[in-house]
Image 1 (tube, one colour):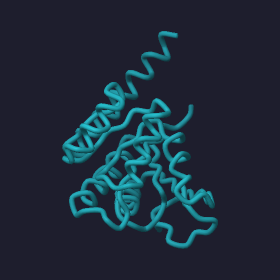
Image 2 (cartoon, one colour):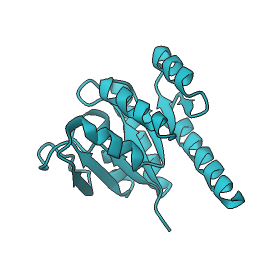
Image 3 (cartoon, one colour):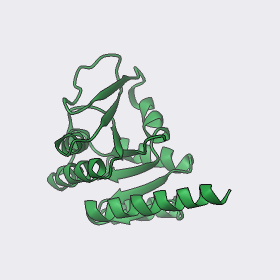
Image 4 (cartoon, helix red, strand yellow):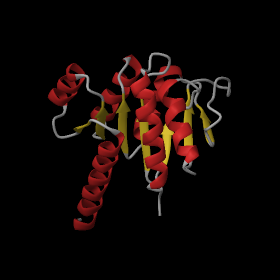
Amino acid sequence: MRKIIIGVMGPGDSATTADLENAYALGQRIATKGWVLLTGGRSAGVMEAVSQGAKAAGGLTIGILPSADTEGISEAVDIAILSDLGNARNNINVLSSHVVIACGMGLGTASEVALALKNSKSVILLSDDKESQNFFRNLAPNQVYFATNPEIAIQEVAQILDAEISELNQR
């Protein structure tokens, strides 16, 4: 059976303390569920915190790196995929994920959310940024979900996955 991959996207160097705390808790919860974590793979911001959280809980982590080498990679990444694509790797991140969680918001994160929505992926916004929430909800009201904390984000992921499995079983 194919593993469930949860993509967590978020700011690197501009991540807030709340983003980092939420990301670490997300990583732990993703690992506890037995899901695989996918990030941008770098040792910065949300990518680092969520990967560290997943590793602390015994999870499997994948990092899709923007470069052709492992410079700047998180030590918590188990499987490094070197893309040499720069920001274009964002499309790989979202297409490889069953569900995307945006933990915080920045330009790169916004591009990943937009790519996910364009490719009919469900996205959970773990942020209290009302402007981002309204913007993405207006673009894809049936694909965007909101969470105020990591536990609610994971509950949303579980509901989305259950609905997808149910839909597949009906076919």
